[in-house]
Image (cartoon, rainbow, N blue to C red; front, side, top):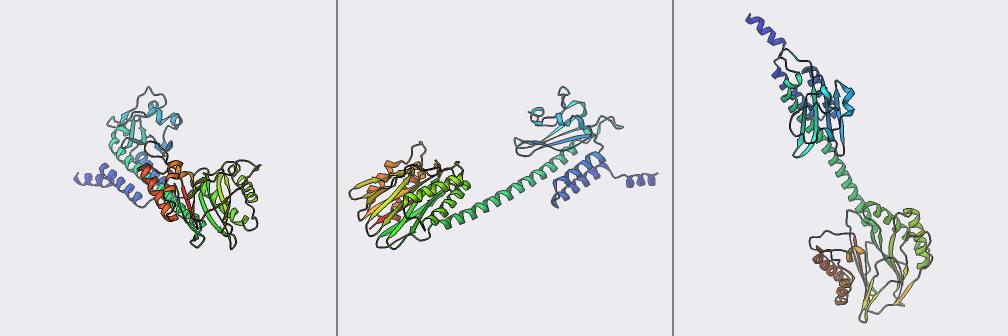
Length: 410
């Protein structure tokens, strides 16, 4: 008889050994990084074919909505189940409330899977065919099914997080490349000579942004410099500004008149943005021999021209570019610049930067700083402006991109 008992035990592995082996198989599959579909197939094989559970549905949250990952058995009612409605408040293993018509008597148990207070998945199991002990397979193997479900769902979540991390890393790298490309659009050399001393800085609110400044030597005696700002932030603004910069560089090769130049730029902005974005621009042409500065302010924050006689705001111009199909009226400003004058151009991120009391840095504060530091170098003026602005905002984050150009006209 002893021999017969040994033979029976050899043919039929003990249930606890099967469960242990099943967990090892699942763990091995996870370590081998098998696809989610294979994990779910293995899960179904264990609970359906080995444990005899006749009905199961597994819901998982993908970060946006609930989806049914796996189901077998009585499938005609699965589409009626709404996890957000039917499982609200369920945080522990729960017997099915038969008053919930969508769950019906096909299921006996609800197994929730949580991460802290966040529900990740719900499993409904049931089998009304009782075995010899009078206990259904769903109830008999409940602790094991719960353990197995937790392992599977954690693996699915880890795969999802891994994919999301890969996407974030790829996006981060793309933004880094975009910023490297955008930096190449800014002039690599600014004038420091007997006529002009110029410095500039650009601080994007995000990895890339829509502010832009430039300096272009037109001929031996004339230079053009500008500052511009695209409505909006981020990659779309940066793309439009890159296109704008290329257009400006090309047009300046054969258009000398600022009015004609601005009208051409307006047409290109309208064509490229389709009226969804606009660009504010301050552009100036300076002749080092005549000391005449000709400029157009196209809806931009007015630059300050500061000298020993006072402070002037350069406001003459037109509306922003891309607001209208055609610029009906464009005016040019003309200024005779005194020796030692400082011209400071900036974007609205500087003056609109708020502090913890929602008080903006403001134009009055900017003007006061410039009047006090008119004899300083452009680099020193920019440094002082940033120091004062950071002291103003304290812990408040930047609200927008910031571009500043300071030009000392000798």
